[in-house]
Structures are given as structure tokens and as C-alpha cells.
Image (cartoon, rainbow, N blue to C red; front, side):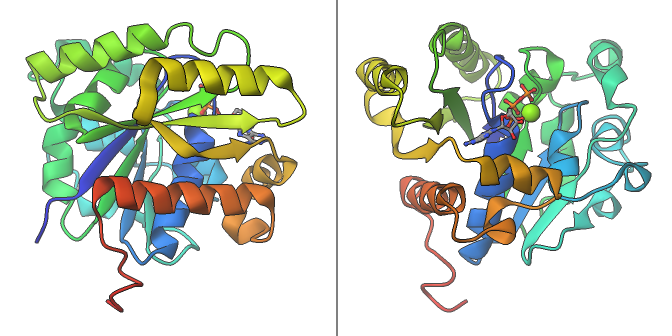
Length: 265
Ligand SMILES: Nc1ncnc2c1ncn2[C@@H]1O[C@H](COP(=O)(O)OP(=O)(O)OP(=O)(O)O)[C@@H](O)[C@H]1O
Ligand SMILES: [Mg+2]
């Protein structure tokens, strides 16, 4: 069995679309026939809420995954989307950032845990909190690639050089294979010149690392989250659902994956 692609959704800037991209990319990949696991590594638990996992179903999740060697596949929950599973953020995750400091191999907790549970998944997505602390570091050490959502607004590029430096450091110190799988421009508004300028700047700096697919600002995307569903399930005809499906398809090509739908698997 092939090792899964493990993609960390990371940007230390808050509210740029990490969670939204994690949920909808996960659904888009599942729609292509891949077996996908989303790990909610953000104490805010937005990915868990956005995929319909209520608070009473969050007793054991990513905190147990990180801190308990015996925790295993039982942490994985099915979602209503065929092919998409989740490890939710449990309430204790808020303390993990501090607790992990004292743990052996503290940067490797997630990598070790994923090695225990990853059998059968084609892609594992890790939704990171808006910081470059130990949780995000664990995600970057475990990951094969990073997906960086970049919100099309003023200051978008600020701080991204810090993220890129962190990715370089993690590559040198812990994870030689880590690469930027894609920078995705989110909340793009064609009526706003600023969106166009940010897109140009991003392409100027990062070239082909910036994905071709633009994610438009679309109210259906955020409505879908409040209903605990990906946009594709909430309103498949919406521009947001179409854009995220296109982004998932582009990523499949970029990663050299073969669509399971295409080969009828
Ligand atoms: N393309 C979009 N169109 C409209 N609203 C969007 C879009 N993408 C994200 N949003 C909304 O913007 C807000 C921030 O998005 P999201 O939670 O995905 O960002 P984040 O980077 O995960 O935030 P945090 O750093 O707090 O984890 C949410 O309310 C979400 O519903
Ligand atoms: Mg988030």
C-alpha cells in the first residue's frame, strides 16, 4: 500500500481560509474517489464543527492522538461525506501546546501517531491553528506537503515569509521531503482591484507554487460551514463548491495522484 500524502493547511495569519480549504479540499478529494482523513489540529475546532461533529462527539480526538501512544484508529469518525473521515479536536487540545513541550520527541508526536493510524488513507489533511507553535510544527514535521491559503486582501503577503522560513527550517531539521504543495488564493473578489493586485503579487513572489484555481468569496461557503457540511454537499451548484472541486482536481494533478474515479477503482 502506498504511503498517504499528508498535507498541512498552514498560515499563522488568522481567518485566511485554512479550515474552509481543509474541509472543502477534503470533500473534493473524496468526490474523486480518494479515501481522505481530516485531522483537526486547531483547539478552535472549526473543522470539526464545519463537518458536523458536535461538541458531545469530541471526547477523544486529536489531543488523544498526540498524547496517548495507545490511541488508535478508534479516534477516527465517519462523516456524512462518503470517503471522508475526521479526527475531531477534543476540548483538551487547547492545553496541548504547553504540555507537548515536556514530551519526548515533542516535534514528532503527530508523525508517530499518523504512522499508527494511516493505513488505508490516500490523503490526510491537517488543519492547523493560526500560529507557528508546537501544534503547527507537529503538522509540518508529519506532512509531505504544505498547502498555504492566502486571503486576497491587504497584508496578505505579510508574515508569509515567516511561514516559508519555518517550512525551510523544518525541512532542514526534521523532514527533508517537505515541500509547498500549493499556495491557494482565497476569498477572491473580482469586483475588488485589491484581490487582483494580491494575486499578481503572490504570483510574482511564488511563481508556479501559486495554484491556478482562485477561490471566490462566496457566501454559500460560509453558510455551508454553519450547517456542518462542505459547500459541495450544501450547494453543489454554488461558485464556491465548483472552485473548491477545481482546486482539489488541480492538487490531484500537482501531486501526481490518479483519480480513482477515472480508473473505476
Ligand atoms: N471563499 C470564502 N467565501 C466566503 N467566506 C469565506 C470563504 N472562505 C472562508 N470564509 C469565511 O471566512 C472566515 C474565516 O475562514 P476560516 O475559518 O476558513 O479561516 P482560518 O484560516 O481557518 O481561520 P483561523 O486562523 O481562525 O483558524 C470563516 O467565517 C469562513 O466561513
Ligand atoms: Mg481555522
